[in-house]
Image (tube, rainbow, N blue to C red):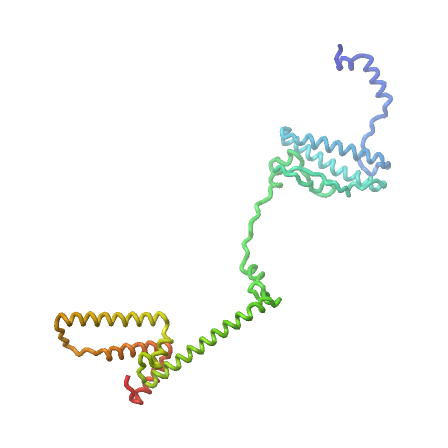
Length: 311
């Protein structure tokens, strides 16, 4: 059997092909200017032809092995066809045809990372130069699509304080009145406790100061002793008790030693009453230095000297 190429080269087939071409109309060439077209159907046909050419060239530009120069030429041709398509679409609107610029079907494309995104300026009618396919990876073009890393600008002190208002400090918290209703009973109770404690401490302090100014020696159960014990903190009371126990232990040990041998004192020693008076005097000084000012202490000393009050 003869092959298709041999059949096409036969005399009969060439004769038939020649007759068919003679019957055809000469191939019409697309006008250089869209304004030269006067028929709406012809304008639609020329726009469709441009779209077919754009599709063919976009498919061809996907091949990265074409070389840099060929890729740049193809990209230039596609951009030229896009501009020409825009001219024909405007001419179609002028002839009363469809407005293709308002098409709602936005085409999609893939970026360098493989993500599907909408084509920016899909109609190609606006200003600007677009890159397709492998042309996006050419030297000097990739940098246009790489987004620079976002540098986080450090805010200045003025910008920080500019955003601070009364709500930052909590002044708007009690505008609804809920917080005030909840805090009012607790605030009243705490205020009463603080005031009563202050009155109690003041009363005890006045009683202790009266006992010191009058020169009375407070006994263990007297008014001055009770006032002093109430004014002293727990830590001071424990310290006094420990010191008292320590002194008692020392006295018992000394008595045991005296029982074994005779003790000869070369200097006069104070007796128990004198020691107790000295300890009480020292505690009174501590209280005065703690709750009375230096001026008040000086006035008390002068008053005792004038009244001839012994300590």
